[in-house]
Length: 320
Image (cartoon, rainbow, N blue to C red; front, side, top):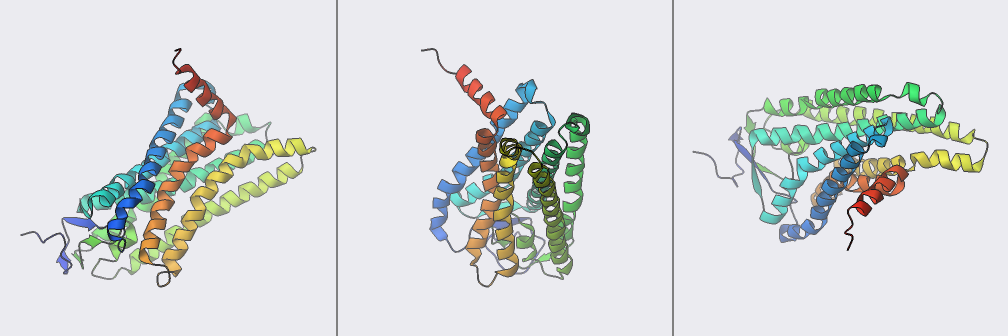
């Protein structure tokens, strides 16, 4: 007979886990629907609109906008991988999730996060070539090469994240079925494992440092090249125009990495000083805020996107 959902006794590999949301908030969790619900809706509408605009307007079939469409697709996948379950927990209370579905969610959350970081690096490199070598840009950065880069980023994200669910699947005993989190985050599930989890801990730490660290290093290097190229331009107007082409991307980078870095630091070094509900809130904000903000940033700050959106809404206006 299957064990009751709320049992916290040591058990064999469960058929399901129980996502408890944000422990410690009790009934106040429902109020977070007013925060995360609009964020998810904004992510769906904003990124869906961006994809529709880029797809239907052939003048936007350029490397920079193809990378932007890839970012929008990744944002949709990232937000959708956690938001429906999060909203269900906030609205209805603790929710059961099948064991296989939990491992699947774990894979997609971490893979989409890795993909997003990789796309931001690719966009930084694109801007570095556009500003540093504008005459050679059409030859160096082509649609075909962007396609190869996106494929390589997707393959890398899959390859480095597949070990997460595999490292969890090797365990046959768990201390509990209740996960003190709003989604199947790798370390939140590992905390329930009965056995030696050293490999899980080391791989999680190494992957965080390697992926985010190398991507941040690449982005920093790209913007170092951009700054060097901009400072060599003869006039202030030229420098402002060149730097303006990167402003949207800088805002997106900050929206992704600043909450992510804060969440990572509180998880690794502030476990005993930062309350667990705060950490879980930060991890959800880290995953949902960028998908909600990115379309607004590019819609407002990118002239081509802004003009196409204005034309679209004008064409939809009623003549009456």
